[in-house]
Amino acid sequence: MRGICVFLVGALLCGVLYAQSDEAEQTLSIEVISDEDPGSEPVADGTAADELAAEEASEAADELAVEETAEAVDELAVEEAVETADELAVEEAADELAVEETVDESAGEISELAAEYRVSEAFTRLTWAKRADAPKWYPEKFAQADKNYNAAVAARDAGDWNTAYETASQAISALSQVVAPPDSEMPQNPAQYVIRPWDEFGNCFWNIAEFFYGNPRQWPVIYRANRDKLPDSNNPNLVEVGTLLDIPSIGGEIRSGVWDSGRPFSE
Image 1 (tube, one colour):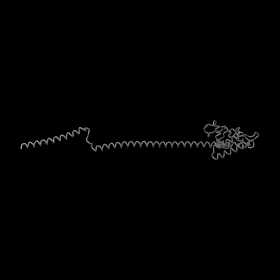
Image 2: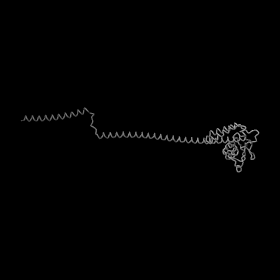
Image 3: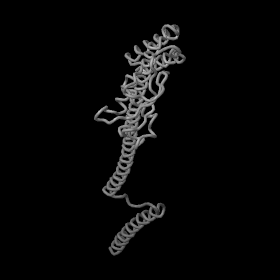
Image 4: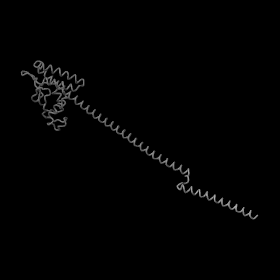
């Protein structure tokens, strides 16, 4: 009986030792696994990973937004610069066009005035040549001058100022050698004139030109020839009574002497 009890106690003790030995092996196995992978770490929390990904995505979005904004600003700046350049170009072109139109207009007015003067000179010269019997003594020259004069008038009426000026000049040139015959009693035109009071004669360059040339628009011819005799050389409206004016020849007509109220002359 005692032997049986001893046996049971021994068996129980062996079971306990065996259980402790198995637990120790499991603990040792865990330690071995831990030693084989010393760098392993616990799996990260899923929420933290999501937050990190969200932050990185937000930063990337911000950077992209900044880049797109910068690109948009650059494009806008380029567009504004182009628009400004276009506007400036248009303004400059408009200014240049205005200047050109002003120059063209002024040139046209000058050409018209020059043509008018030249045609008037040709008429004065042709009229004088008729009175000097040029058709009889200078038939070819007079015929050519008359033809050129008529062409000048037609060109002037058509607004062709250059042609009018040129053909009128040709008419004057054709009569440049025409003089009154030696035995002619035709009075010559005066070469000088003394300015009379305005209230009696209405003397001014306009009226004087009409009196001697038959054309008041020829007044600048007399003005230019007498500027140094005026109180103010730049003011043709200021003339003094008693001033001796020179009356230039404008069409080759012969001029001599000083005009007086009792002396006839060929206009």
